[in-house]
Length: 176
Image 1 (cartoon, rainbow, N blue to C red):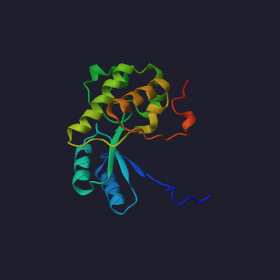
Image 2 (cartoon, one colour):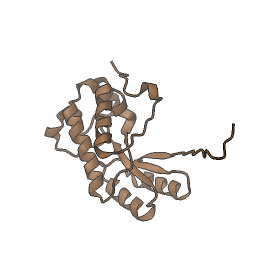
Image 3 (cartoon, one colour):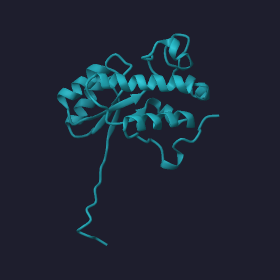
Image 4 (cartoon, rainbow, N blue to C red):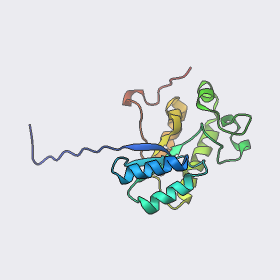
C-alpha cells in the first residue's frame, strides 16, 4: 500500500575499477563519470598512474567517489619485498591471480595487513580520504582470513566495503 509519508530512496552505484591503471582507463572513467554513467571508482595505488588519476578526480570530478582498490595481484608492493615475502613471486611482484589463488591460505595475515594498510595510507597521503574499499580480482573475499582483514581495515578507517557477492557467500572459503 502506498504511503506518501514514507519516501523510498533508491541508490544505484556504478563503480569502475582500476582507476590509474593506464591513462586510457583513467580517462574513460572520468569521461563516464562526467557523462553521468559512473558514480564511483577505485584506485590501484601501487601502480604508477594512480596518484595522477586521484589528483585529476579531485580537480575535475570532485563529486566522483574514489576508493582504494586493494591489490595483491598486479605490480609491485608498496612495502619493501623483504617485509612482504609471502605475497610475492621471485621477481618481487605480486603473484598473478591464477598463481595466487592456490596459495591464499599460505599468505601471512600480518604481511597482508601491512601491505593493505600501506595502500590505504598512500591514498590518504594524496590529500583525499577514500570513500570505500574493494579488492582487485576479489582476492580478499576468497578466504575467511583475508575477508576478516578487509573488515578489520574497513572498521579501522570507517569505510564501507563493496560487496561483489551475494550476502550469504561473503567470507566463505572458496579455495581448498
